[in-house]
Length: 64
Image 1 (tube, rainbow, N blue to C red):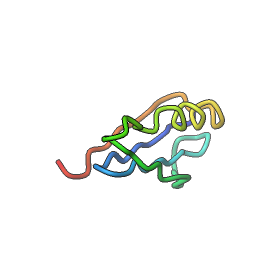
Image 2: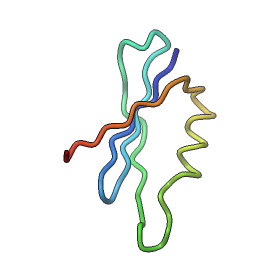
Image 3: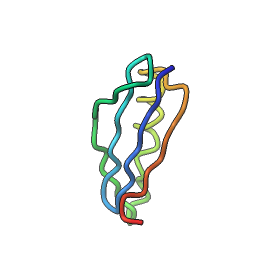
């Protein structure tokens, strides 16, 4: 089972994926967010989910 980890910030979205056992994760990409332009990186995020076959998603809010 692959788990996709998201680190949500105000200007970027960090993306990591776990190994197939779900034990370790590795950062794979940082997606830029343009809130004023309405680009929240959802299209790229959906491509990553499809590419890696993520079964679960974990969302972190590091500033809370």
